[in-house]
Image (cartoon, rainbow, N blue to C red):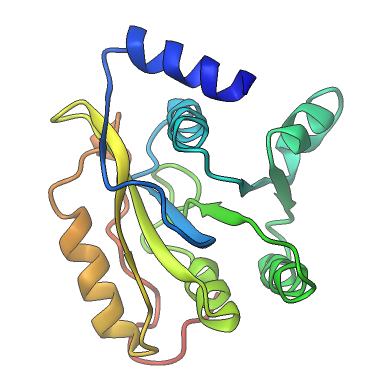
Length: 193
């Protein structure tokens, strides 16, 4: 209740406008892209809280150290050890298969601006759990943020990524110079890394 109220106030006062599709009717892996600023986190919370999405999100382990840890976990955070990223995929898949029901927000472009390809964990989690993939976005050219379509991945990585690239082609994050093109390292083999 409080989260919905806070999000209503945010959207009423913000220069940003909530746009796009309604919340998915089922738990999905929700991409947050382009991820070019720490302000994307505020927009993600505002979107999810306003639409009533029960979600978790993946964040670098250092965000959970010290006094921030309990706050980040209360906001739905799951720490990721970047030295062993495949472990987090296994842990999330196990949680979902174990009966936990939640949407999962992932920023596959990783650290803003330092990657040349997206991380493939979002793809592997969606495929291994059978969850759909919701394309969330921030677009500073229109000052909108929200959700795009929810798609079911086919397993044809190149074709699935072509659909994702087409959706994000006209989206610009808060700092466009830090944008990473939606591309996996190996789109013609199995989604890895």
